[in-house]
Image (cartoon, rainbow, N blue to C red; front, top):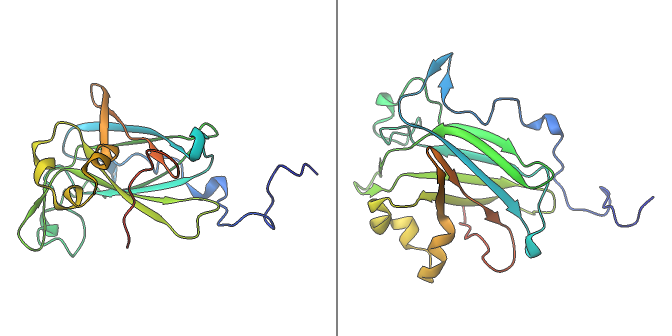
Length: 192
């Protein structure tokens, strides 16, 4: 036995089997065989730990509003008007190089229960071996004017850390959002 390869008794779980992420669970662009409304985008990124070491088999879940900014959830007062072809939730796992990929639609601005508007964003949940709890963060889009007034983005202090929550364009319809679990430039995470 190689002493440098962690085993279940030496590593904090959870451990996810490869089948934990169903094929196609990372594509949010259609439901019931019908295309969701809106502009299709790809979100690509890499999950690393301190020192830039890639993390394999990290499970990422995203949830977001549809192209009109409506969440398919009873807490959204407009949920009855949600796109019937957009579920708003997906799951992906990282490969051995820490890479992940989602295909989704560009979310619209969403209305909060207090009447304020949120910038277009994607909520991200991270589950990985060695984490004692799930991590939650939010991805925003570079160049969105509404970023300047978004309450969640504005709550990240010092202000220099906000850049770590902004996805960078990588070409037409494609953005990059890297997640760092520890070390310099650690992604800001939020409590439940």
